[in-house]
Length: 207
Image 1 (tube, one colour):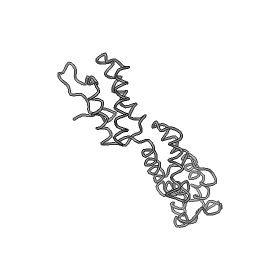
Image 2: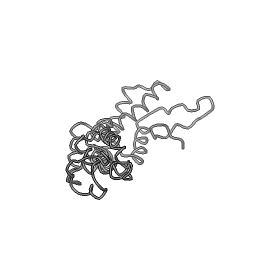
Image 3: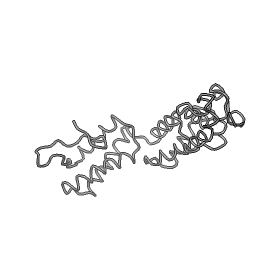
Image 4: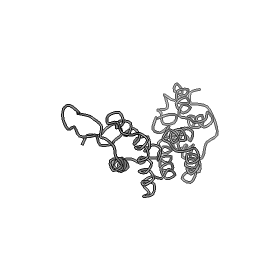
């Protein structure tokens, strides 16, 4: 079955004259759509609300569906998904924050990502704070992960480190890490040194 940009099943074409016409939504359709999406992706309540409302808006344009009534159906579906445990913003935020931290995202960018996905400020802050349960210094762990993935600082061949020092510092700065932290990453003598607590600041090789 074809899927639209939201990952929901597209309406089947009945004839060449209405090929691609969106389905007319009703409560049962919206619930099936929500379940199908949640089978594939984790989601915040607000993110799923946006996706379902987009389905409603297409139905309004194609079929004259009453938007206000259909938005009420959306809220009922969301409440049901929360009641069944399929939607939980705290759990979603914590899981996504851990995944982003392991990929090398700074605390600032994790908070922005969660807010963009509809997680409220308090839940986003709690998820970032909880990262301290996995690492003594989650910001340092994220910066090391990014340096390893991007081959920055001590992960570069020694002959390239001096000329690339400024570039590596900027890469870490753009990722949301402080200059002090970025400098310590780039200055580390070896990758193994990054497995220790934050080393003192020094100079890039070749400076």
